[in-house]
Each structure stands twice: as C-alpha cells, then as structure tokens.
Length: 236
Image 1: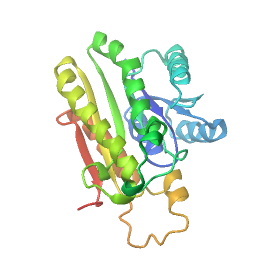
Image 2: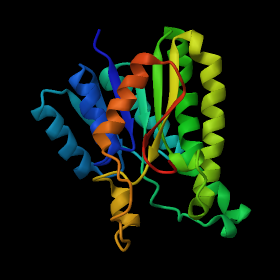
Image 3: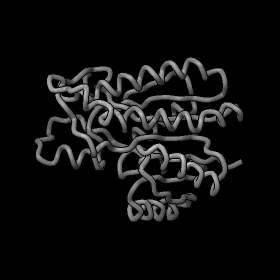
Image 4: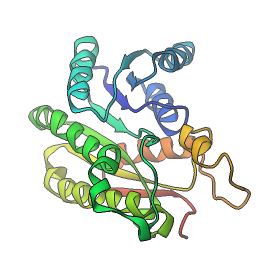
C-alpha cells in the first residue's frame, strides 16, 4: 500500500528536500503552506520527478486551519503515515535572553511549540490505532547549545524537546515514532535564512544543506532508534 507524507509548513529549504526524499522512496506527498503559488511550483517540480503530490493551503499555526487541512489531505490520500513539521517562524521576533518578556511568550511559542503539539494530538490517535506512523519535527541545535541571541526560541525548543522525548518513550513500542531533527546552522535556500541573515556577514556561519537534513529525517524514520539527531556544526 502506498504511504503518504504530509509536509506542514512547506518552504524551499528542509521541507522541500524531505518531500523529494520521501517521494523518491514511493511516498505520495501532501504539501501544506500559506502561499498557494509557492505550493503549485513545488507540486510541479515533484511531478516532473515522477512523484505524486498535491497542494493544500493553510496556516499550520492556526488550530482550526490545521484540523481543516488534515481533513482535506485525508479526503485526497487517505490517512497520513508520516507528518513532517518544519515551518519557518517569520512572524515573531527572536529575542535575546536578557530581553525575554513572559507576556510575549505565548505568541512567540505558537509556531515552535504549540503548533507541533496540536499536530501530534490530531494524528496520534489514528496512528496508534493502526499501529504505525511517524512524526518528524525540525528543531534547532540551540536547544542543546544555548545561544543568548536565541533566548525565547531556545526556551520554546527546550519545552518541545522535553515533550518529544517524553512522548517518544511512551509510544516507541506502539509502532509510532516521533523524532526531532536539530538544525545546526542556517539552512541553505530557506526563507528564514534569507530573512534573518540578509544584512549579516555569513561567511563564518556553518550552513546546513537541506538535502542532508532530509536524508537524516529518512534515516530516523527507518531506524526509529532515538528521538533526536543533529545536522550541522552549530555549538560543536
């Protein structure tokens, strides 16, 4: 039976490479993002490579829209076998640890923490019932190597890491996998890299190839032998 991967927060970096990697392995691909024109372009690229794909428009950080788009994907492809979550977080600023304001944290945590938890809650019951499924969630290496300039982001990712590790331990023997891919540097070709580093000298940055991230995600999906891996040289 052909399996389906849903990419939540599709962009030109990691998520696009994940779509290609899983598509090459025979998966059908559901691409989700807010911008339709971008999605149509990616669907065309995947089709040219012989990969069946479809575009679905939604803001994955909005709980109601997330549930709606999951329903649309399931109508088109049936159940989702793998959910990949790696949207850029361009809507809220990164704040130095000295400037973290607790009143701002709920909004700042929406994309990196609340949204992936909502996704898991929506899909996990069905995966447990089938005894198969996987979640692959992008994180940042700053959660392992704290950086003052990523104060609020690091806090959200720290909470996410705790959640994923805890859940991984609970569901590992139930046929369902959840894992974090820690990104150890700016991702080549990504929207976030272009937005945040446009006025910065990046010559010394340890850039990460999104194809390497995708290969790591694929290996984690197959091996299911741990809840996290890091790609890139940040903090090392």
